[in-house]
Image (cartoon, rainbow, N blue to C red; front, top):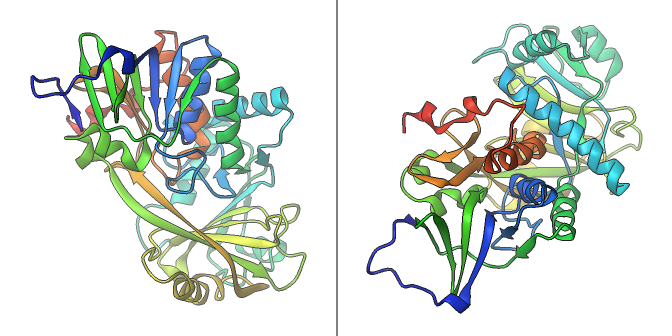
Amino acid sequence: MLSRPSSATKTTSTKDTVSTDFAVIGLGAVGAATLYQLAKRGAKVIGVDRYLPPHPYGSSHGAARLTRNAVGEGSAYVPLVRRSQEILGELERSFNVDLMERCGMLMIGSERPKTGEDFVEATVKIALRHGIEHELFSSAELKRRYPQLIGLTDTDFGYFEPKAGFLRPEPIVSLQISAAQQLGATIVTDCTVERLSQENGSVIIGMGDHQIRAGHAVIAAGRWAGEILGPLFDRLLKVTAQRTFSFRQEGSTGYQSDNFPALMWFRSAADDQCITVFPQSHDGAVSFFVEDTDAAANVDDAARDFFERDVSPFFSGISPRMAGSDLCYYTTTPDGGFIIDRHPDHNRLMVLSACSGHGFKHSLCVGELAAQLLLGKDTSIDAAPFSTRRFHV
């Protein structure tokens, strides 16, 4: 969709044009954070979303997103998540809200993984390198502490981070959008971006018979980013549908957040495939997620297969009764890393792809970092590891 202006391009009349210093396209986790951080700094900013956020069509919805400080994906992410935690605390204090369940996070892996790199061991190394508080549990200790985990093997070990837990994504997105509005931001929802170009020192964003002329634009559109940005990014960004399932407990005490942490379990009995588990929610259900579960299948059939394959052999006290299921859309780069960078051909476009699956916990800081870069301010976070240049574009 991104194009340079040409004689064939329809020009919208001036009266249909709104001018602003900054426009943020996409108001999910990263877009909402960028909008808020720009408005907080007094910038004139408009936020645009094709639906009414938070909505169930991207990857910023649902009941929970895991957060942890030792990020096994690499040391470059540790400053992002630490600053995000600070911003989260500032939001909670400023608005008197509770945006995180601080139940701790347990990560389990095998001493002898069958495939790939040992993600748990990488996490431990990151924790040691950055002085992150944690405990290590042997298989015997895991079995004693968490008898619910019936699929543990003798070679399993655990990494426990007491200050981790899970975030509440929809309240976080909603709060930042409403706070930005209170600070003067304009919000345009239920509006699809149809045209995007950079001309004469501005970015032109076309939406039906109206357009926005912005000094700079931020593309944080998740699954729609490739479509909006066009060549290069439509090949660079991969979108996949992912499904989570929630099941009822058979008992009433096994999976509450006061006695069961958020869990990432790389199960050696399932080829080291990771299952993410969130403790009991307000409706008494426990949520489970395994990446690349068949999202196209009938939900009831998929839930039955998922329970038999991924839940029943590993967790006791969980009923096969499905309590709910969410569908979300992951957007990832070839190396799974973030993009926080100017468009290589359009210097007034900033591209933010937080990369679904491990992005939400960093999003608050990514928004702040983007605002600092856009406003030409000093940054305390190094954005170089997230440049598009690593893809040789």
